[in-house]
Image (cartoon, rainbow, N blue to C red; front, side, top):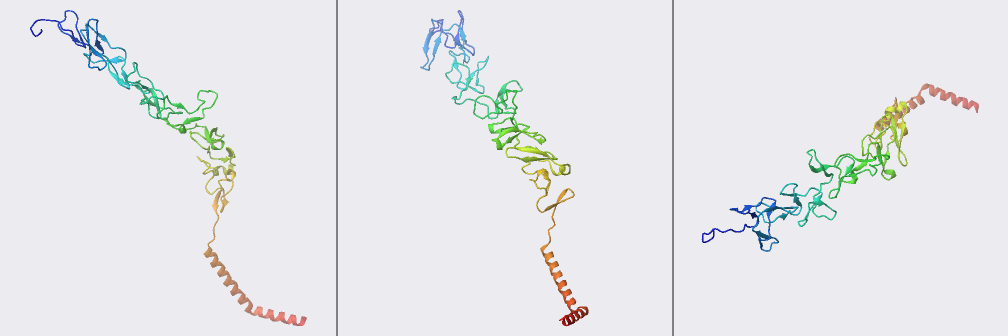
Amino acid sequence: KDAEGSHRCNKCPGGFYSESGAEACVACQPGEKSSAPAEAIIVDNGGEGYSQAFGATECVACEPFRRSDAGAFSCQLCQRGTQLGNGTNECESCPLGKYRLDSDESACQPCTEDTVGCPLCPAGTELGVGSDGLERCVVCPIGTYRVGGTLGGCVQCDPHHDDPFLSKQLTTAFRGAEKPAECVCAAGFFNNTRRGGVCERCPAMSQCDEPGRDVPGQLVGYYVERTVESWEVYRCPPALELQCVDSDDPREQRCATNRNQDSLTCSECEDDHYPNKGDCDKCPVASTVGLLVVVVILFFIGLFSAYHFCNSPVTQQASTLLTTSVSFGM
C-alpha cells in the first residue's frame, strides 16, 4: 500500500526477484544474483564499481570464479590467494604451489619464479598425496632432496637415475634431505677425495654396506691400505689374521693394539715392543735408581775383592818369588 492506502506494485530491490502475480519479492540464493531485464531500473551504488538493478524477475548463477551471499545483486571475485571451491560457493586458499591475484578471472595458477607470496612446501618435502588421498606436503624419498623456497618437486641426487646402464652412485642417508650437500655415495661406494670426490666402488673384501662412506671399511683378516689415488685390500697371513682387525675407518686403526698400524698386514710391532707368542708386548724398562744401586754394589764388591787379593799371603809369596826370579834373571 502507498501513503494513501491504495495497492500498487513496487519493483523488487537488487538481490531479490518476483514472478508475475507474486505478493512478495524473494531473495536470490547464495551463488546467484538478480538479473537485470531491459525494463529494470539500474542505479549506480555510490561509485563502488557495480550497479544495483531493480525489478528483476529471476535470479541467475554467478559468472565463473565468482560467488555471492543470499540476496546479492552482484557476484564478487575471491580475494588474493584464494579461489572458488569446486562445487561450492565458498572461497578457499590456493593449493600449495599455486597462486591467484585479486583481479584474476580464473582459478589459482601454478607459481612462477617471479610470484610473490606463493605457498610452497617446506624444505625436504614436495607436493603429493597423503595416506588420506588428499593433496599435501610429503617428505622427499631416499635419494632425493628439495631446497626450501624453490618451485617443483624433490630432485634426484643421481643425475643418471633414469639410465639403466649406469650405477646409482648417489643417494641420501635419510628421507627429507634439504640440500645437495646431503647427497652421499650409495652403499657399495665411497667418496674418493683423492679423485675429486667422486663415488668409487669399494674394493672386494672391504665393508661398504651403508651409504655416506668416505673410506672403505676393513674386515677381520684383511688389511686396507691407502694408495696414491685410492685404497687396496690385502689378505693377512694365517698367523696374523686376528691382528688385522675389523675397522670402520682404516685411517684410524687397522691393526690390533701394540701393532704398527702402517706395517703391511700388521706384521710388525710398534716401537718399544717385541713379538711374544703372536702378540706384541712392551719392552721392559730398567729402573734408573735400581741400576745405579747395582753399579755401586758391584763397585764396592770389586774394591773389596781387590784389597783382599792384594793383601792375601798367597799373593805376597807370589810377589816375593816373582821379584827373586827377576833379580836372578837379570
